[in-house]
Length: 175
Image (cartoon, rainbow, N blue to C red; front, side):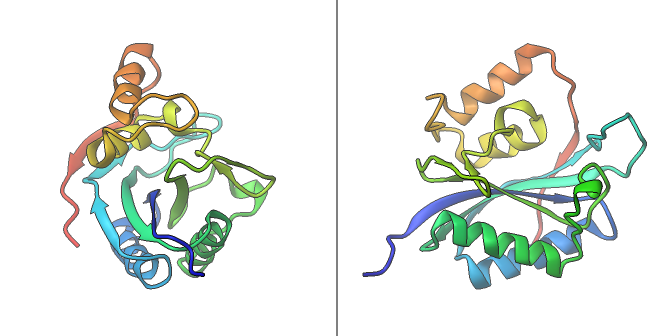
């Protein structure tokens, strides 16, 4: 019996080379192996989050919703393969370095996973405006399956916490 179709939310971004061209290529690759893209946020130009305050090029970030029959672990494997094909180096010493592409599996419906390879929902979702703002744009009513708050509520909470803001500007994503 085939797996049921489910919705997944994926954050993607990059800050090396031509990030918008790389994001477009990533979208095509995601559609080929993960499934059709239902929704796509605007693009968000953001300051780079660095470990020691180094200067790095700004990022271009977005979030997409895709329909898929893949199980979460299989989907993560495909996203990591796409990153690798697009030039991402995931070596531990490169964690805080600029990158051509970053694909983060945020949610797969209401599924909760906690394995050494995968944590769903993604544990950093509520901490960064460059993830929450595009998430709220395309899935504002979606309820976080662990904390029970919508993406709109998480966005409102982030705005009141006084955390550092990264979003510089928003612009349409023209595929």
